[in-house]
Length: 172
Image: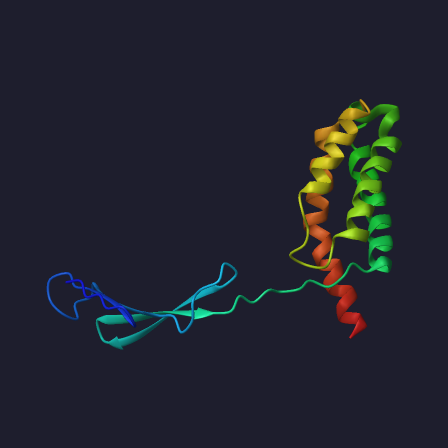
């Protein structure tokens, strides 16, 4: 069974008999025209033992604004990153040889720029700085570009958001 009406819009599906476990009621209404930036919300509630009602309604889009980067955090995290990346990559002496310091310096510079300009807390850690690291290392013909970029990314995923949360919990 399918029921349609202009406003509110209702669709009812029945498998074999009304209120079977396969029934679904959808209610849809828009109080004003949708704009390109609008969004839809879907909510469901049980109305009978074997039936659900889903209401699709218009709501203004809600955007979360991330905090601005914190220079002190960027500085301390960059230093921590530099030390720990150096320790990690120095385990692979055959790969980096005499270029280890320069590889770490390139990765640290790119990571620091990202933290100063773009990192605003959990949810803002991007992949771009790590791909930029690999490209920059390859462009300078430094060894272990993929290994250094991957190690940097894994370190950042493990520590950056946690360190941000620790810093912000102490500021409150």
